[in-house]
Image (cartoon, rainbow, N blue to C red; front, side):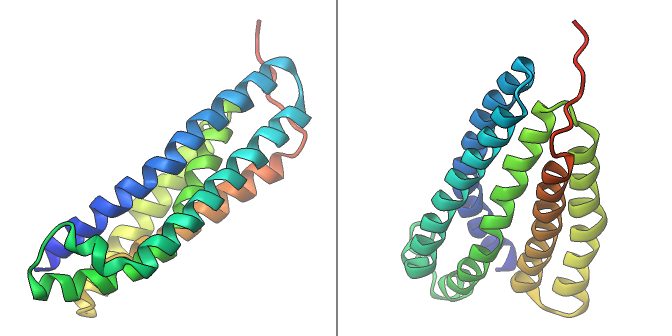
Length: 180
């Protein structure tokens, strides 16, 4: 039953994630154009715009999922046991939507700036080093089941989102020189 619940949560999360992923791709294009033009103001403006649009869209989607979690779950099953598990899990998953959006916009913007290793390393650290063992510990060892898995995603997404956003801001007005 936990696997079925996780499949529903991940399917909904993947659909929600497509919104910031598209915004992140557009942000990367605008950031890279500004890098090519040598405009740090353009880089900053593109990043802020992408992050703002992504977070506003995710806030709206989170509200929809939060207030209609049972309706969303019913799109996948009418099994009462699965609905009971999945409804609460979808509510909890709303906690990682914003962090997940921040990490995808920041990682794409960083890559567009030429900073490819920081996002790669942070994703490895957050989702392999932190999320996998934490998920096992919370879901299996502590018997948290689906809730434990989701909490591990929340923690990993927060780490990744905060670290990647920090990295972009910390770079400030530094731009990598592009060889012509």
